Length: 312
Image (cartoon, rainbow, N blue to C red; front, top):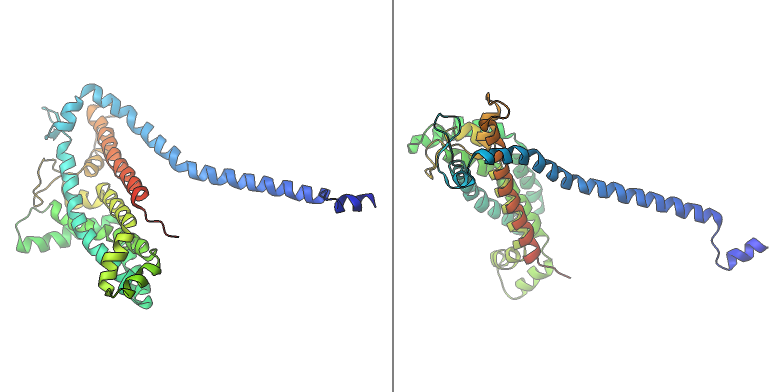
């Protein structure tokens, strides 16, 4: 009777208290596991910085930082050494620019078609086919650029066997799925009420796509473009195989050049002694590349937060 009265008066049963305690422990454990998973990226970034900064600091003890960022001649292995990283940065910028000229227009047109014009059946076929391009190994793209695209270009225009033009074109094809797929996802997330309102005002489907849906999804589209640009800047095998291994400060896409990633690969596979100045250049160039991509990702994050459209 007394226990029945305690339950009736609102006191929890001892069994329920045990179950609630066990549930709280499980919830707390899940929370800690998810927090640890989220912290992996932070600790990985910190680890990358620590692995790069030691040798990079040692490098700049021997090389002027002014010469490094303003010089246009890169020759760390010659008797007359030069450490002008602009020779590598210009090649990276040129190949990435060519790649974006290919990927952005084609990717956005494909995204507009898939989001606003394609039927459900067509979308289910075309989008996976586009995403297959992202799964092809980049070394295959490199051989494709060297053995197919370059000879094709040389039939109509005089270019070196190794050049940034063919490397940039093939790199644009490789990053095309990033632009098209992510942009299509951003456009598909725009509420249908905006489309219906525009149709109600007499707009055509093309006008709705370009003047209503595209601006509404602009933050996601810009994020996809910057992600693709980061991917192009960090690409290694395509430029290593097709662009060449000759560091020079030029914006001529028909000649052989050497990008930052290509230089890192070439020196890493060479005979640079650990602790030598040539060995330290790998870390200096890697830190520069990390800083560039990190800055682009920060800009992407800021842009998305600043211009994201929120719909109720």
